[in-house]
Image (cartoon, rainbow, N blue to C red; front, side):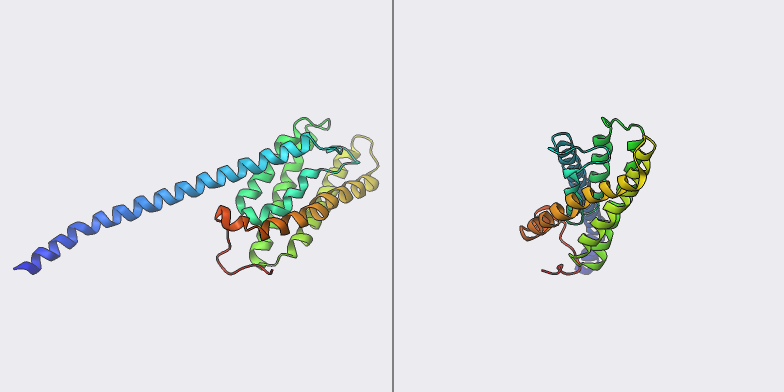
Length: 201
């Protein structure tokens, strides 16, 4: 007599459990979205501040954009870092004297920051950050160089100057920043630690 009653109770409780799991999953998803928006906003704000208060010219053919050191941190922040970098570049380029052309650099900035993030995520090798940040510098050197050539600047010299400036910021400054934050455990702090093992120490 008790067995049907137990089965009935189990059938009634199953939808309740399912609802609880769905509610919990929805809450976790919302928390992840909130965290991504927060990380993206913090990154973008820091990028803009470093551009606006840079001791070196952040625009033009002879530029060292200190804010580009943050590109090396993107792999530690996940896709939120990619979005934050793109948003930061967009906002920082609005006051540029080379508007609206300077806003076009948002496109290569997004693509290359995604590559910095994606290649590190797939290889799990910290040295790829040097290679991808160098590639980022070359690509930005070419796109910015071509843009500035329309304003009377020599093409090849401008490409060279911008590329060198980006390497100084993204590699010479960015690489030590990447190593420092990685050793401090920023991925664990923000919940972005990689699922498939640790990167090379």
